[in-house]
Image (cartoon, rainbow, N blue to C red):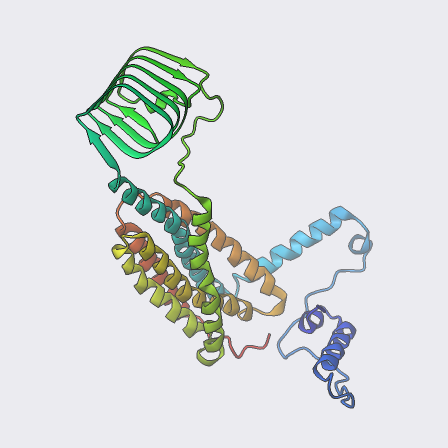
Length: 386
């Protein structure tokens, strides 16, 4: 892609700008060989000032890396400071608030959605657990099998051998185990709580101490305890499913972007932005009713579809709100600030995954509504010359 003629004009490189215009003219008239290029002189729009060129002094023209770095930093700082001076100060502040609000709400929910799906799935899984209570197992062999989602409550195990077995989400609660053997065992989210273990042999297992909270243990031997990481990985987490669930929400951004493109020039950037963020703010109240995995996935898809229109409007409005010489500086600053807000949003929402849904609901609604209100103060940019 050739460099922007507008940028070349701003930099005083008129000849290069003319060549780019000729190239564009040739592309646009590929089916009209007789068309002639008419423009012979290029001028900057009135009121536009070219930036000062570097001096031809030895200090300015020397091939000195340090001098180039210093000049670049000074130039960048000068451009950055212009964002907070008239006539750009108000626009910069308004856009900054909109960027911060959008990123805080969107990235915060982006973290909350998959974690909340995992929580809902886990709660449903636990509700379907097989409960065995007030039972006694004696001289029993559990061999080469997999025990899934079983809760033993007040169960006695005597002379029982667990061999070549996977224990997945198995809970021994208030149980008594006497003269039992656990051999070649792999486990996930399996715990012995408030239980009595006497004369138990663990051989080739991953039964680390954290699996025995508040237990009475006597004459326990461990042989071949699995070394390395003692983190208790959940066998029920399948990353393919997590990816697919998240992908559904991301794919709805495609039609959302197409819809935004249809209304962007008709309604204007500011209206698209404010309408999108207001609708997103209102839709956040439906978080309160999310009780199932399917409901969360559907809500995420709808929310992303609505929100992405405002995000696209914000991108375009930011680009069109500043003149060429500070446009990339403005966009880079606002984008960087939004990333910080996104990180803070992720941390904030992450704290309330296992608590009430009211906090993420109200936070999202209030933050996006603030962003919508600030966006209404922005000047429409659809007719700006870029």
